[in-house]
Length: 153
Image 1 (cartoon, rainbow, N blue to C red):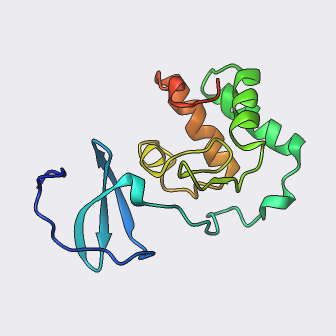
Image 2 (image 1 turned 45 degrees about the vertical axis):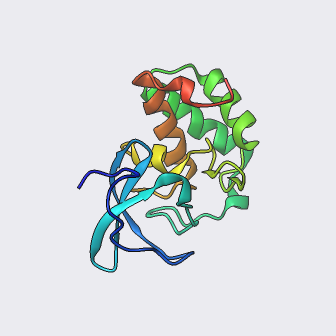
């Protein structure tokens, strides 16, 4: 069934329960799998928890600002986006901290993605806190006309 406020409630998730997003989303709802059931949860109720990223076992403090700058520049080049604009947005959004979490807005990582937005990118399979994935997801979004989804410009 399609998600919505008028759809029947199949179950209630306990607070802090881990779910597996399928990658589908619609009107602010995110499809998830929990205890073998597939259903929809409002994206604003989901939070991302830092995990080890495939191929990236570095801790947040081990990234130098110059390494992060090079990661952002590489992503900008890959998707044909302005390097300095992307760098400015990352500085504004997270102060160039890959593990940044906004507890009030529910946004995460170097480019401060909300879970539903993150799931809409080709990088959703990666950890939202991986600076390479975050920079590439942002550059991809900009390349498909979604640059204005950031508060910082």
